[in-house]
Image (tube, rainbow, N blue to C red):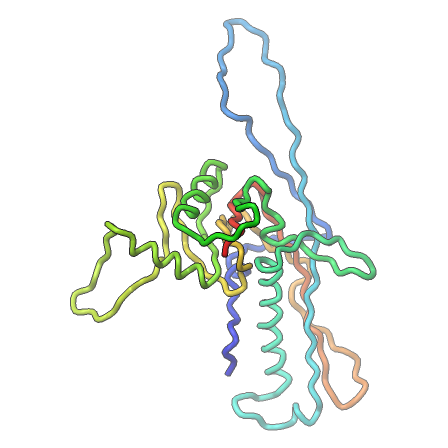
Length: 276
């Protein structure tokens, strides 16, 4: 058995949109702010006022793991496993998906175009969120509070974001659970049940309804308010294996995948940082 957590909440919620190139681009647009608009009868057409779109881009990132098993090990009869090689391949498959999750939400990485000596990297969640959608505290750590959740929800609403997920680290899920204990809030108890419930899976504010998702790989200083439909995993080369050269009594394969990430609009959602 393996106890190590293998969940990948961010990766699991992403839709897929294949890319045909290592470098991929998309465009963002905005509407003019509401303003007084009253025209004189018979007036000429108002002057055109059209802004250019914002071009966004990122690049794909190659993920790889290698399995190498000796002939003797693969021939041995093992408890609960048909072949050692198959066991190792399944294990590396889980590990490499955790590496993708790390790139998405923990590393706070930005786009690295790469060269012959530098690996390419896609920009993760934090790297594809504009400064205007970042709620920081001047570098001073502070605890997550319900007021911060409400402020972020209101900011997202004002920006036009339809956020539906609050992704937090496990320690902050304890804080969110504490929201239920606030004075005056109603709780329902099943007659005859001997249990205590202290969890919030859905948080409803005046601005949106959020599914609370805890993520063991979340960067500990961050919380993300997300509309998953605005994010796409960009497969360039989906998972595959290649046989490595045999130079002795062993079998070796490399597991490879190449993916990017795109946020359809960098002003969408909220990145809450400087959390303790």
